[in-house]
Amino acid sequence: MPTLPLEEMTVKEKLQVMEELWSDLCCNQNQIPVPQWHKDLLDRREKLVKEGKATFVDWETSKKRIAIRIS
Image (cartoon, rainbow, N blue to C red; front, side, top):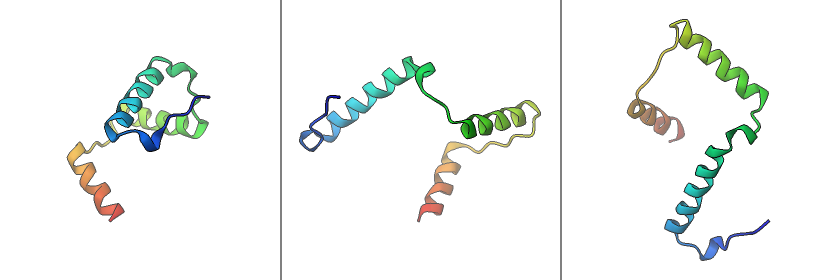
């Protein structure tokens, strides 16, 4: 497997590589294994949405909650 000279790359270059990786992964989603626990969690959440029992929080509120938890 080829390796990247990470210590020689700028942050901008690293981000560009990450973007390319994500783009490629998105084109090959069916090749990415999903752990059963993750599928179960997503299935439960989808059921809650269909039943109208799901609650949602906007992104700004979520970021604030995360910041509080990790500080």
